[in-house]
Image 1 (cartoon, rainbow, N blue to C red):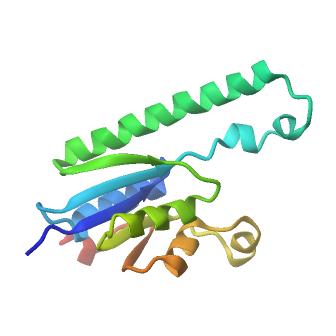
Image 2 (image 1 turned 180 degrees about the vertical axis):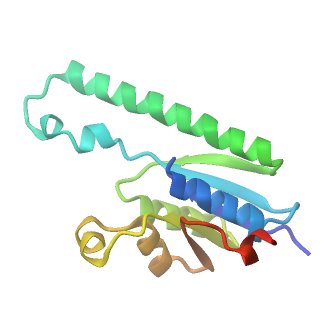
Length: 161
């Protein structure tokens, strides 16, 4: 049997960590090729009203981007450590794009993965309508099986107890 390719969407939240742990407990096989993918969104830059105004101080913007890059580096290191600690053969891939859901689905298609795993924050219908949801986008646009893991307590069936 050929090695399976698994793509796990990571954003540094407890929800994505839960999705990784759920994969490890429920789907992982020792010969799986695992890709942890991360799409940096530069929250402080995109959500700061100052950054949206024309005439912004270029030094201030550069500092904001530098701080975001430091945060991204910490997350990428954490993801590498998660793979190592779990003894998983895999890689961490940083993606770039305006819409994380789109670039994650595109990467999954490009790599011809067997399945995709993502967490979810459990946004309500109204908030999801206005804010959007990466997991919702992935679920509706991926052309392979998608496991959406809602963060919560594992039940007895999932933990094997």
